[in-house]
Amino acid sequence: MKVTNNKTEKRTAYLTVEMEPAEVEEYLESAYKRMVDKVDIPGFRKGNAPREVLEKHVGRDKLFEEANKELMPRTCSRAIKEQGLKPLTQPMVKVTQEEPLAFEMVVPLVPVVEIGDYHSIRMQPEPVKITDKDINSVLEQIRQQYATHEPVDRPVKTGDIITINIEGTVLESPFIKKNGVQLKVVPEFPPEIPGLSDHFISMKKDEEKEFKLKLPESYPNKLLADKEVLFKTKVLEVKEEKLPELDDNLAKMIAPNVKTMDALREQIANNMKLDYEQKANIKFEEKLVTTLIEKSNLEIPPLMIESEARYLIEQGLQELQSSCKTKEEYEEKLKQLSMEQVKERCQELGERRIYWNLALSEVARAENIEVSEDEITEEIESMIQSVTGKEKDTQRQYLNEPQNRENVIGIVSARKTVQLLTEIATSPDKKGKKKRKEAK
Image (cartoon, rainbow, N blue to C red; front, top):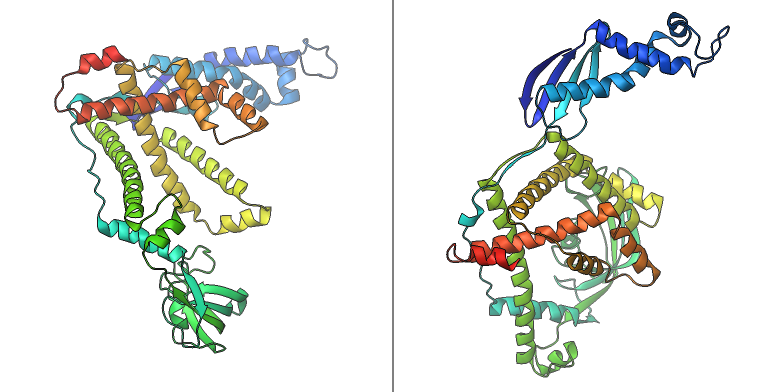
């Protein structure tokens, strides 16, 4: 057997294997002995037919196919061992020549994971500051929620709520037809048809209007994107929005335990602070792990990314299907997706997830981070806290299955590792490393 390593790049080895006829003959003879006991050949008892008779009866291709069941795994294993490779998965094999036998092997290799000096990373989360402008913005949204709408006898203005009949056609095919639909006349609504609301400004009750509007290239239904729509509309009613005053009465209406507008503002500020801090921490952790990856040497085979991307696509399609009530609804939503964009996004996300997992796993190993049984149980209970009844027991049992339990361990381990990296990065110096290890 002759093995040639043509090249190794991106943690993938490309080998060519050429075998001597005598080596192949051993596997063919072994295949013959297995097959002759199973095949009925006229004129011979099972196990007694000569090899040349068996070959004529089943064909040499069948004999070669049977031989390959033993030949390929053993030969590939020998070739990989001879080249001193550490495979990630089984190689992909392509026969290029049958006599003498030659084939090509593509061998994904285990990733290279060389973690940089994470003890030198120093950074802090962005400070959270809540301004009066932020609070006023929330209060304005609340006023919108508690607004009333009164009929008016005047032309439509921005901010009004109108009731309309609307019919649209694209290339003489129905696009939309709704009667008595309510619409708020603001530039940003509806978001999928920019500019639609503008055509209703200055219209009066019972007025009819026809106009053409081109759908954007980003329109969800790709078959209709960038197409011109002929709209026929009629305004049935115009209502003016009346916003409540920002006073203590509104504060009591919003939260019974709050008596004054000042107390409501304080409550809003506290809630926003918690929300902003959570977002700042997420952003900080992402930046922290990204910095760790940038300091490290991580090399992975493309097959890992492709496999992760396929998993993410399948998971996404399953979630989409479960959110649809009918097969037709699912198929319609599928048409609105750009699978090329989905694949590209999943490739990016898959690569990011793999780098994160490799980097955090290596830090966890270096720091001897372990996950206790109590932590596993606590995490599982947290994951199923919103489930009730028998379904809770079912989910608990599912998450305790070996593979799923390993995933839970990975989640807890990653979180503990990020917590340790955060402690290191936010500390003013390198002191306390020994104490952190002792505390684990």
